Image (cartoon, rainbow, N blue to C red; front, side, top):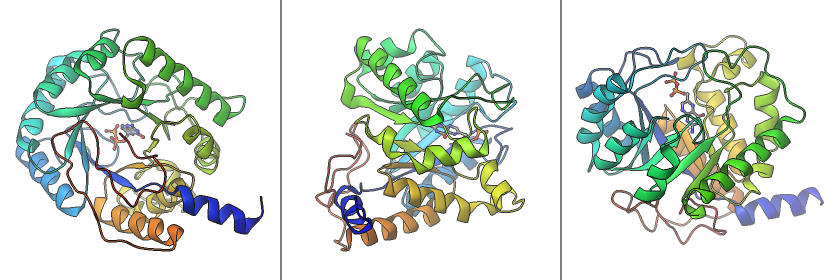
Length: 307
Ligand code: HH2
């Protein structure tokens, strides 16, 4: 394909970016641990992220940073439930970032319509059945190993082929368990058992994961490889790096962007999407609260939005 033809084909398929704001109700998250542990602070933060343009709030009560120790079910519930309650009706879809079925079940009862499971349904045998029965959306993420040990010398044959075939298998497993295929979103798990080069190769060839036919979520926000590449930036100084990777991911067809810095990412993604299309139309539909789907928009040229 010529360069000009390839630019045109990106423009024809660029998705409407959906921004997922991170609400970490944890003492030890790698970039904002402890900041939102108090329920009132977490709820206020969630409202602020919605005002900045988050269409989804991803609420988590257990850190998955490299080296993180597991948290009990009771403690995770104690952290997230008041925050879910406080954010239902906030104007964004609620996502629960958990791999425990009991936490997901309580979160769904409290209004969550997306289960973000970083173990891709491997962490709890009850999770697939729960998602199937409750009819919510589920994000299946790739991770090599488990958080405590995943960054110890991760190795792949071809990282993109390995991650892609893992996600295809997990999608097939989800469907075999009764989850409707259109409920499944996929995520390459940037930073989860990956070297810097693995992360970069996954982002550069993200279209190969988009080709699996499901909405693709990317979570590069503030991750350490961005700080390392930029010469040693602290998590709060990695917004520009986050945006660079989000825009690249958008050009490869990713549609959901999990970020801490919502306002900056949203503006960059809207401008990048409009530029790739070569035109801008004012927003059309904005209902994001009560259904299990994100918004639909007549601006989307191909159906790569989460549905
Ligand atoms: N990254 C983190 C947590 N959950 N979920 C998905 N789907 N994709 C990701 O890349 C992803 C995720 C890690 O980021 P954060 O929540 O900020 O840190 P911590 O796990 O330390 O709480």
